[in-house]
Image (cartoon, rainbow, N blue to C red; front, top):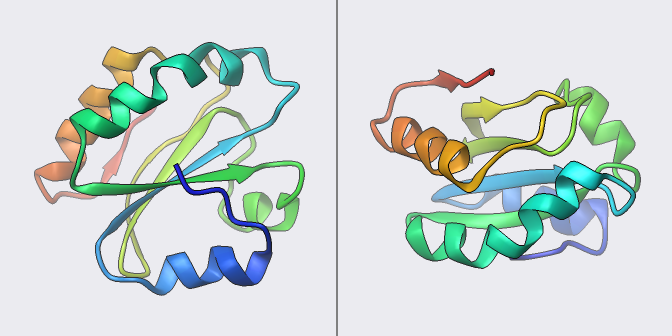
Length: 114
C-alpha cells in the first residue's frame, strides 16, 4: 500500500498507467480500522491493481472533488479515467471488496454501492 505524502505525489499516481485503487480512509474511522488487517491479503489477491491509501482528512479537497463523502471508499482509475467506485459510509468486508475488484477487472465501468 502506497501512502502519498503530498497532493503532488498523489496526483502523480493518477497520471500513471495501469489500474490504481485510491482507498479513502481516516485514522479515526472504525470501519476503516476494521478492514486494515485484511488489506495485505486483498492486495495479494488483486495483483492487477496498485493500492494507494488516501487520508480523507489530509486530502479533503480531493475527496470532495471526487465525491467521496463516506469512508472507507475505493475509487479505481485506469490511467486518469475512473473505471469503478465502491463509495458509501458502510463497513466493507474483504469479500465485498474482492467482489468489487472482480467486476472492475471485467473492464466495464462499475459503480458499486451497497
